[in-house]
Structure formats: structure tokens, C-alpha cells
Image (cartoon, rainbow, N blue to C red):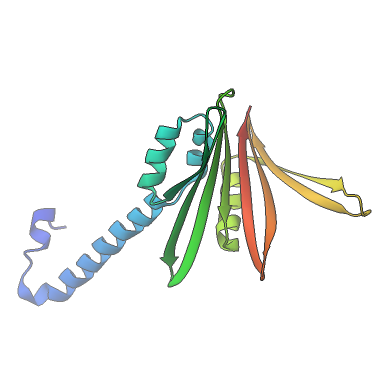
Length: 178
């Protein structure tokens, strides 16, 4: 194997190798950038104890845009949104953050509009040791709705799907600790 400093000084007959190496290095670098922009499960759980300033920095690093919905002495609501192209299609993710001044914990909701994102997140919950619980809750019309939650130690993540109209579904994860 050649030392790294000699890789780009190969003889001219190795130009194809240089090109492939360059493409490989670029793609690895780009995939690292994309991964760094995605919120992961641990980020979301940690946010329940973070200050607003730390959350702002994390979300800025992940390329989310901040919008303060409400801010006063008792309560703060902030929405962070990320829209980018993946595989040529627009992908939207959002984080809704609520902070009551009187409480130490934050309210965190993470929403995605792509079913694949939701399924990947659910898969990650299982791999991280969260246990799934499904409860049927009766409603006034004689039917029932399904409540899905994932629990690990003092963390609980509830999952629901909200129909937004026009065939659009929001997959919502609410994170709480206590």
C-alpha cells in the first residue's frame, strides 16, 4: 500500500485510479456530512435536559432553521425545520421544542413526513434497547385508537401518525424523561 502523500503523485498511467480514489473520498466525505446533519435518537433524548442555547447550537450544526413561535416568562415554543433534497426528492423534518420555566425538563416532538424516516427511527429504537408497548384506548364512537410507546430506563418515546390532508402523513415522536 502506498503512503497517503504518494497517492496523488502516481504515474500518469494511473489517472483512472486517481479519479476513482477522488470520487470515493468525496462520496465518503459527503455521506459523513449528511449523517452529521441527521438528528439521531441520542440527540433527541439529550435535548430533554439541554438549555435552549445548547439546542440552538446543535440544531444549527444539523442545518435546521429556527422559528420562535412563542416566548415569554412562563413558556417558550420553538420550531426547527430542515428541508433538503435526498435522492432528488425534497425531505422535510421538524423538531418542536417547548420549555416551561417552572419545570426542568423540555417537551420535544420530532416529526418526519417520509415513512422511511419513521421506520428507520423505530428500528433504531429497538436496536437501542427501547421496549415497545401498544395500548388500545376506547373512543366515544365505540371504536378505539392505538397508543404506541417505547420505553428505556427513564426515557419514553410515544409514536403517532397524523393525517395532514391530501394523503400527507406526519410521523410524530414525542420524547419525555422523568
